[in-house]
Length: 131
Image (cartoon, rainbow, N blue to C red; front, top):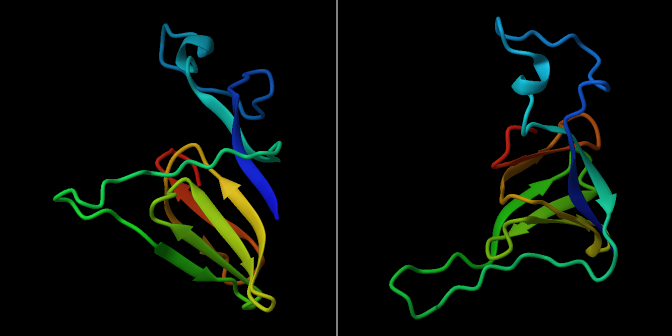
């Protein structure tokens, strides 16, 4: 299985295609300080560090364990899952062979994910301001 990880580039005004509107008296560089640019998924170098939440099973709050998200692709070829004690990671499975195709590692926990109903495209929502 291929492991992909999320990478964000720093905002680069020179690469920005559309003109940036700024408030009066504020230059565009001040406006974009701390903003991130496009998100890409790159192949992770082995071994990939996956974030796993360790919780005390004897605590008063019951830990979230097991599969908390399952979604089928539009043609039923693929299945994505998220293990609740590994919320930063999505697992992509081949539904016919029940084999792991890829792992998608994120910087923030995955809140939801859904396949496009018409194409083999996956929408992923994390705690960031991007889809």
